[in-house]
Each structure stands twice: as C-alpha cells, then as structure tokens.
Amino acid sequence: MAFRNWRIGMHIQQDHIAIVALLLERSRWALRRWWSIPLMPGTVRQGIVVDVESLARQLQPWRRELPLQHQACIAFPAARTLQKQLPRPQISLRESEQATWIASAMAQQLEMPASSLCVDYVDARAADGWRVTAAQRLDINVLGQLASRLKLKVVGIVPDASALGAFFPWLPVEVQGLAWRDEASWLWATADSWGCCPCSDVPSFPGLVSRVNAGEFRLCNSASLDGQNFDAWSVIHRLQPPLPARGDSFTVALGLALGAGQP
Image (cartoon, rainbow, N blue to C red):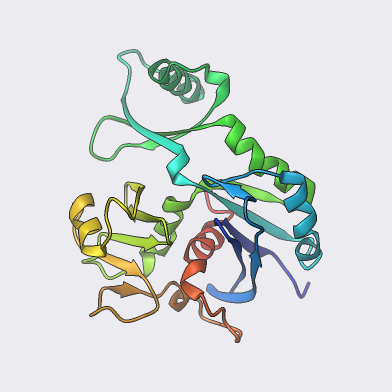
C-alpha cells in the first residue's frame, strides 16, 4: 500500500499539540506529515488534558487524515512521574513475578494502592536492581481515553523526557546527553536516565548540564550554539517542505515517532 505503516508521535503541550508522521523506507526515515494544532486556553493544566471529549472532537479532522496502518506513541509529562531505584529482593523471582513485586514495592514506598499506579521498570546499569518509573493511573487513563475516542492504534504512552533517547544513535560518541526546553521547563536524557526541571530553577543550558552532571550534552535546537546544538530534524533522510516554523517544538514528537513500535 502507498501508506504502509506510519509512525506517529504526539506531544501535547500547553498551547498546542505537535504531531509528526514518519515512515521507514529502506532503513531510512521519511517525513510523511506534520501537524501543529493550537489548543484553547485551559485545555491542558499541569500537563494533563482537562476535557477529553472536547479535545477529541477538535482532533477528529486530523484523525481522518491518518491511514489505517499506523502506530502512535503519545507523550506523558515527565513532571508527573516519580523515579526510584529498587534493589533486587533477596528471594529469587521468576520474570513473571517481577512486575507484581516491583509494583507492590513502589506502592508501599508511596503509600498508595498498587491499583492506582502505572509502573514501568528497566534494569539499572549501575546497581543490581531496577530503575522504576511510576505514574498515577488516572493520569495515564486520560490519554488512553483520548486515544480510544480517536481510535488510534497506540503502542506506547511515554514520558516526554525519555523520548529524547531515540536520537542517541545520531549523536557523536563523546556526547552523553540531550536537553530540550519549552517556555516553562527543561527535559533531558542520557543513555540510562532522564528527567525534567523548571526553567525558573535552572535558567540556562550550561546550568542544566552542571546540575545533571552526566558529561557532555547537546541542546535540541536548530540554531547554532557553538557546536552545542542538535537539530532533531537532521535524522530524517527525506523531508517534505514546508517544515514548521517552530521546528524545535517538534523534538519530542519526532523522538516518539522514531521509537514507536520498538521493543
């Protein structure tokens, strides 16, 4: 088919939604479409969609532009997650038991019912344990409800900061991390961690690099900054102009699309 399988990245921001559609052609990425959809004030509060039904209605014309074959990955605000390191228990766990044990351990630490949390985990490289990310299930469900109303084929709801990790194959070997910012906050990622912080706490890129203290970083920015920038659009082999005027605001959406469907 002409459409084949589009990889969709959707980043819901405070005043607009940045969306990109990519297609993998002969091991290279091609841009199919991009959308910048403005949002009414109050649609998003603290990173969470307030009125799912209203937003779903607004996005229906966009949804009709998507092919049947697509995989969508939606950003979730890293600021609404909690990350912890959990050591492995002294007892031996089968792989099928790990998820239950980790969810229970996080629930105990947070003093919340395990059923109220969505928990994901990866092996911690620096220690014998897991790096665990938790979010409130109600927050995740909001995006799930939006996707359901739009009949999107969602393959992941991913912390926005972690999406920056999709660009690492294109970074020089001496670079350990990437950072991106909007008007209110910084997002950053390294090979084994990610996070966010308010711009009011760290107003400058050098200040963020010093705070994270994880080696050399690049700023996701299309403008030249003495070689310290990384243009996220540069990883796309085939671009179809015109490109968005606010191209840097699509960085997370591009990262989501690059990673959509990957294990």
